[in-house]
Image (cartoon, rainbow, N blue to C red; front, side):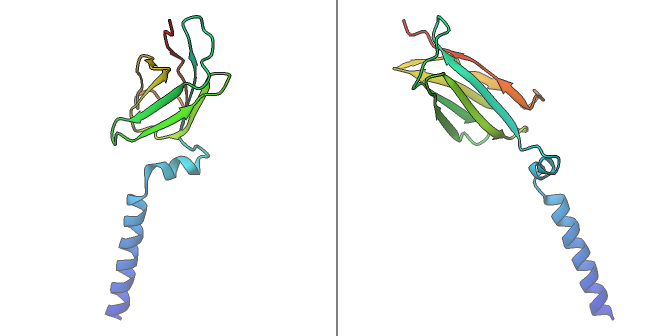
Length: 121
């Protein structure tokens, strides 16, 4: 009997630990949310799209970097970003670089749009 009781207590503790230790993004998935979406365009000083520009997205916590090569429309897209992390984004085109912009964890928008301008003159 004592062995059975010990087994039940252990099972309850492990189940409780699993719920507490579950990643925070799991809660978002239950709600149908899959993280934040960052979109935007890479433009020159006359607001023309810069195709083949490279957009860099850096996770400020881990310093992991993702890249995106824009198409003819100049659009870029980074889906499923963690809402609890700050990100820095900038673009490069033919050796020129845009200003670096920050996506803050304190900005609670699910969709963030940032246009990046590069002076190609």
